[in-house]
Length: 422
Image 1 (cartoon, rainbow, N blue to C red):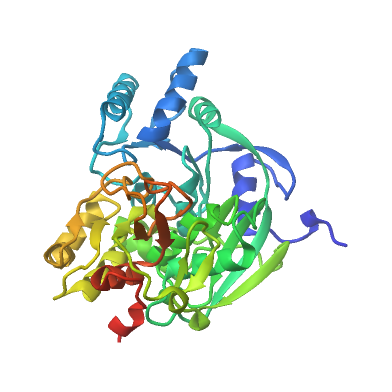
Image 2: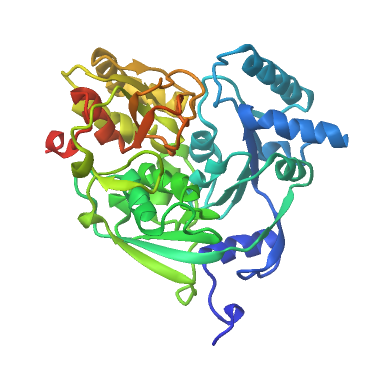
């Protein structure tokens, strides 16, 4: 059997070898340099507490550090406001340059639309940091102690994960999006089924699977246990960076003879709209299996599905209609809200009876701005549906794509969106 180091390198190995300053292989324990580090309001105060407890309150490179208030924004109670006051003082005391206060947006969306680049190592104090794998970065969530060490030193250590390749071939049919790909993976490998793996996604037809879709899949990489969920940069990646950020980036790709521990192919044209039924992300069913289930509340948003294409399809379905289930729609950033406003989506959603705001995670984690009560059934475009995730543990949460969520809000029951997307 050939040794790993005699083979070409995967994208994961290339990124981590560059960050480590030496060639690394799966199973190696390596100290790596971090390109971007971040936290939000809910985790940030724990990170700062660790720094204060050891008597070292500094950041190794302020240009590479980002703070965003998103989880409890605006603060729904005195404790949340107290935490944000403390973090504002911290940011001012060390002159944080990349500080996003209430309303700017969700951290992971801000990292994607403003900061992260292909080939970087991105670490943040939140499990859904994997989101920026969509742009070709190796991105992981870290705990408070590890994050404090990263901020002080600019470095961390990790065990190099095994590379796993997923190929996306053909094109998705109407009504099928990135959420359905993520849920399909969960149906096959189950929650935590790809633990210890860095999943690399190769897209056969890049234009048919745009950045919004990729961000949803990478975001939910943590749900199927992946250490990282990285889309191999291609023309769609470079066009996104050029069109949205004015950056001319270079693609980084695995070697042709790169070796993966295993691979899996998804034929996008064979997928249908999927949902994760209560109370697990891997309790995946076709929309046709659950269609007709009465629903009280619909949430369209979060770092998983609060992007412009999600709002566009929701507005298309809800245009000239009125919601029968109460509906909250939240673009993932101020920039996306502005674009949705200019495109008329906010107007359509508002006239349909939705509550529309921006820049908060609130409903997704059951924090505020839309918490379910006992016995209520919700459909969410978020990332998790375990008991108590969005409020009462006596409630039920179904996860779905934005089209399914909008069609459900329109009819007041779980609905196949394809009949609205001819």
